[in-house]
Image (cartoon, rainbow, N blue to C red):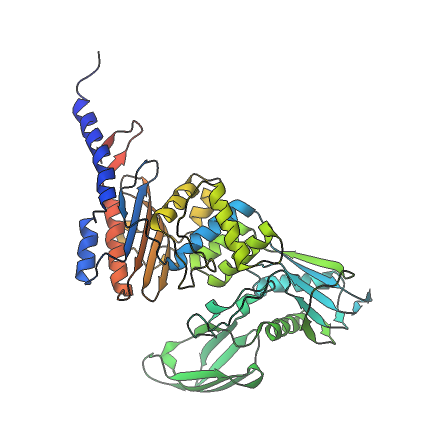
Length: 480
């Protein structure tokens, strides 16, 4: 005979199941979120929220979720997930070396061609491995030129300064098929006794006129500029209390930079150069002498999302387009590849504008619901572990290492985004009942500050984490 003891609980579960979608559809803000907005004198007209527990048929919360908004760097989630599913986590980028002329007794009597295929992570250490492979192939002296083949990508129109006027900032570097070390110079300031050393790596000429001074560490006391021949000229005062400091800056164009790095590393490896450099496609008669393979795509996606690397994302975006539509890679082909992937996955994204795929744009748009559905699909996808583990962990690593301490520490895998007037956040939160919840927060408001946005984000995530309702195996909602 059926027990009547469970009838009230079943009735309560039914009522809650009916009411929760209605609350979501109405777009009612949780009280803590409303209070955070009010404290910072912000309205909700520029805010979109989408909160959906994994395994549920309806969202817990949906506010302006169909309004396309600027997501800033959160759009990287879409680019990296599409790349993982289209190319596979074991995919590796290749960089090839070709030679013309004869090779005898270690001397290449001709040109050496380096052909890039868009490797997003060809940093100094990896480029050194490529050159070491050339030395192991028997090349010691290069009699002709070192030629850089950039033909796998179409060079993007515009200038590094177009987005925000900061041409020397590494995040503004444009994609290139052969891109080494993000085209950036690591500049280190090292106090030593009564003087300050300034070291540039890769090596560029440095004119250091900075004076080391006593007193507290306060910024703004020194300046630098790029003089002729990429010489870095420093002046002013540097407080000794600041200790060692480093920054990354782009101080020269792609060709001279590549040649400078090649020459420095080749010399360190005992090699000799007798020619110059130029950019040109690899001729058909050139013979392959060495191929370098990047780390697997899963590792590259981890670096992109943990540290929100714009340059790596733009490289991946164009490389995905080239893989799917053929070389040369373009922004248009990259966008087409992601739209095609969305269609194959049955994911609708009305109003989606990808632009460069990295979020460093005023034109990029996506709705909170579209992004939320992508995250739900990722959780059920074949490469969920690789994708989720690539996201920053609250209070642990990446861009979240100093965020969400307390109860949320270690309980969320989230990607954040930030531009002037734009703050965003999306990923997975584990609530107090152990249930995983997808969250998307897109906030566009000209008056939005970092402090205000973080207060709203904190309120939202704490509300999700403490929310007591949980779906049990029997589809009955209980309170834990």
